[in-house]
Length: 427
Image 1 (spheres, rainbow, N blue to C red):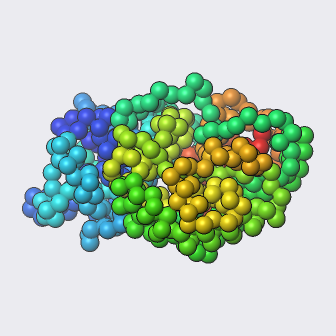
Image 2: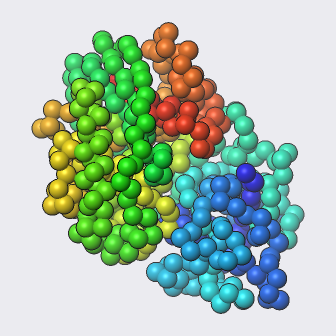
Image 3: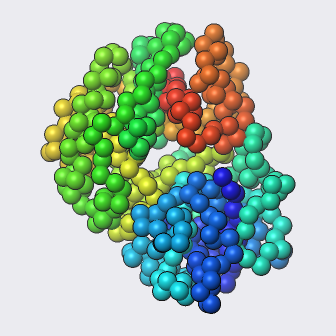
């Protein structure tokens, strides 16, 4: 993996608009070719999986504003797997900010990015190119590599900022419950979009607020959803009936499979690392809780069905999470009509009468709040003898160094660790 710096300038979009465009469209504008038809410096070396730090340059330094993971667009240009044409629905906005077509390709293109994380910090900058590698010895506080202090995150204005909740929370919403509902089996679910990844289920059993047993099970997606590219237009136009029709077969089969597992476990609580519904934000993608800034937390904006713009990220895994919520609501019997209704109305607020505690849980947010409250020692005591398990060792490492300083993408160990952190919602 290569770490890159993209140093934008005030010649085009403002700092706030630069970050907003990247977060909302999924693209950082960058022509691939220069006026002579040759590739611009560094562009050929950018690859999916790289880290892209976005900054705003001024007077010999770059003020950092965001960090992303480079992804692969639906239709990459022939010369690069990381560059693609900016979606048609975003073209007018990019042009309004002063961005121009690639001189050889004759279209607006850019680097496809995902998993936005607002950051602060500065780097010295003497380079003439907007795109450059971050030197191995460069260690600004916001992006220092390896284990160490978590990134410093600030509030970022995103078209425009909604009023923040009164207090930081590690879950998007929850209903009151008495202490008795904490006992029993609680299942944490880490959701993946890849067929072989599927759902990672962490099965925890609690008694008197103490963890008694923990185990894991992976449930691959036997009937995959259509690719995200086939669903973008439905979300952009708010066609929830169209989404239901396009995903009905997968949703029904997946709901039956995951509920069968949850039922056999005798779960009294299910805690899912995923939104339970699409966003209804009319100003852009993302929900209120995803506009928060928490140290070390990367919130992926949930696609909105009300803003009339395509979401540029790969968000198929979010839809699998929504299916998991519907599976619990309908006890695995998910019809096309039920699925369409759930997409329209959402599912979370309809669980109060179901007898099943069910929550949206975001492990990085949970870890951030626990770290800010200095609860590391409390969690270690809670785990007791089970700390010998590598997954729980990883959780303790999260608490010591932050998720960004520990987690390695693509490792099943951290998928299982995240599923356990989701299960901490039982407390």
